[in-house]
Length: 439
Image 1 (cartoon, rainbow, N blue to C red):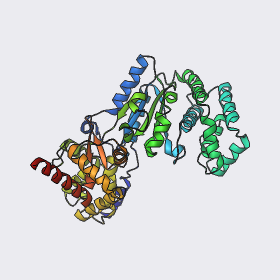
Image 2: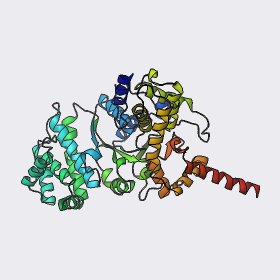
Image 3: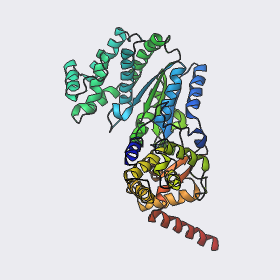
Image 4: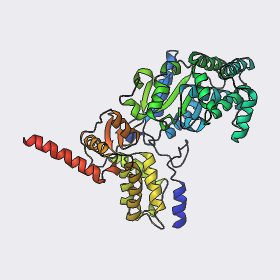
C-alpha cells in the first residue's frame, strides 16, 4: 500500500496541465455546461468568414483547468491546419511585472523561434529580420556584446534563439528580469513607440503567413497563458488599456485573464475590447441549495480522483466524495486536497487524513481573508451574487468565491464553510433579516 500511496502522490500535481491523450484526463464539459475548445474553434472560423482575426480573452479562476483546455484547443487547431504559438507568460517573461511591450517581445520571440526550429518551414526573410532587429537596437541602444553578456551570465545560452533577432529579443527579455536600471529603461524604450512595435510584429506576420500557408493553411494563433498569475490591475493596464494595439495584431490571439477582471474592472471592460470566453468551475451543489449535491459534477470529480488514486486506497468511498465536495469544483483544489490526503496517509486515506488535508488547504485560503471579507462571503453564500467592488474582485481572484456555469452565479468555496468567521457572519445576516421581517 505504501508504494501505491507514493505513486499516487506523483499523479496529483495541481500545477500540471494535462495534454490530450493523458490517461488522467476526464471530460468536465457536461458538468461545466460549456465546451470551450469547440466554442473557440467556431469563433476562429466565424472571424475568418469575415476576413478578420479573432482576439479572445479567456477568463477563469486560477486552477479551473484553463491550461488543460488550451492544450485541447491547440490539438484541435493543429488538426485543422493552424499553427499555435503558445507561451506560459510568467515563465517566459518577467514573473513579477508585465506590460504590453513585454507581450510584443514575447510574441516576436515565439514567431522567430518557431520558424527557426520548424523544419517544415523556411526561415523568416533576413531582410525583414534586419529591419526589426535594427529598430530594436536603435530604440533600446543595446549593443550586441551586451546581449551576448546577459545571455552568457544567465546560464540560458540555448534559449531557442539562433537568429540575430532571436538573440536580441532573448537578451531584452532577460534584462527585463533583472533588478538593474536597464530593466525599466528597456520597458520605457520599447513602449515609447507602440505603433511601430505593433507594425514590426505585423511585418513579420505577413512573411510568416506566406511562408507557412502550405503547411498551416489556416494561419497562426498566439496563445498567451498564465496572464492570470499577475495582479489584475497590472493585466488591466497591459491588456485592456492597450487593447487597440493588441487587437490590431494580424493573427488570431488568445489572452488568459483573471476572472476578476470581468467584474467591474478598474479600466476598460473585457467584453468591449475582446471576444470574451469563460471557463467556470464545476458546480458541486445547485444554485442556492448548498445542502444538495449536484451529482453530475461530483461524478466527474470522482472520475478525476480515481484516474489518479485507486479506489482501494480509500478507507471508505465517502471520503472521495467528501474531497470532491470540499474542492468546490476547482480542479486544482481537488488535486491539492487529494495530494495532502495522500501525504497524511501511511496506508489508507482515512477520515483523519482528509480532515487534516482540508484543514491545511483551508488555512492557506483563510490567511488572506479579513472579517470584512467574511461578511461579504456570507452575503454571497445567501444571495449567489457578489458585489463587483475591490473586495469582490479580491475574493474571486483568491478563489474564496467561485463562478459557476453559464448563468454566472457565485458560490463560496466549501472549504470556508467550516470556519468560525464564516458561520458567524451567516448567522448574523440571518438574524438581521429575521429582525427586519418581524418588525
